[in-house]
Length: 166
Length: 56
Image (cartoon, rainbow over all chains, first blue to last red; front, side, top):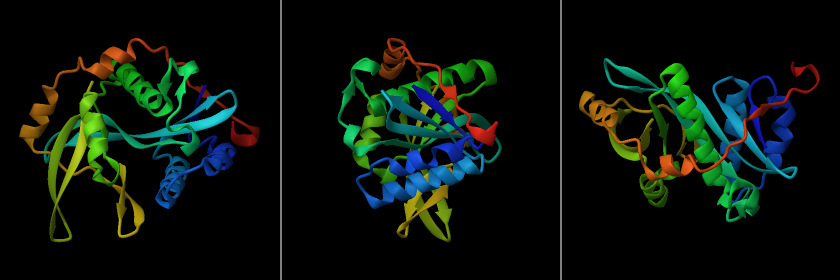
């Protein structure tokens, strides 16, 4: 079961989010940030429950792929999290795939619906810590690795973002 | 808006601007990828919205 978590019902689910087991302390910070952004209506999350167990969630937000003069409607995957005890498990109820794959594919399907309804064009994500294996994973499943160069406090920065055309 | 780990904490991070050439290249990307094909094979449940107490 997927439960939509938004500003209206986040108060009911905060304890569930906080009980999810993480590997690294920074994952807890990312969960806290996600809760805050849902409270502020900046994000919506989809919580995956299987047999009353809370498996993980994916949080998304509205975005735009922008240039100086143009902008195309997109959604951004803010955070995909699976409880550490279920990260390697393939769930029979999900067609024998991992929860992370399922949540990602679910968002892609949702995005395709929104493409037809609202003219959504892209799904975007920022690979956590610019992790190379994550970048390779998303490249393998059809995301395009895009190099972006920008200035941050007089420092020239380079980042890689993963972009999937719908 | 994404999250980025910077100086020991999580910050919200906006996607930097693309060039017009990059945008054109992205608009011409193929859509029929491995993931697109696999998604069609999986049945996804419709998400449900749960409200409790005074949240209605």
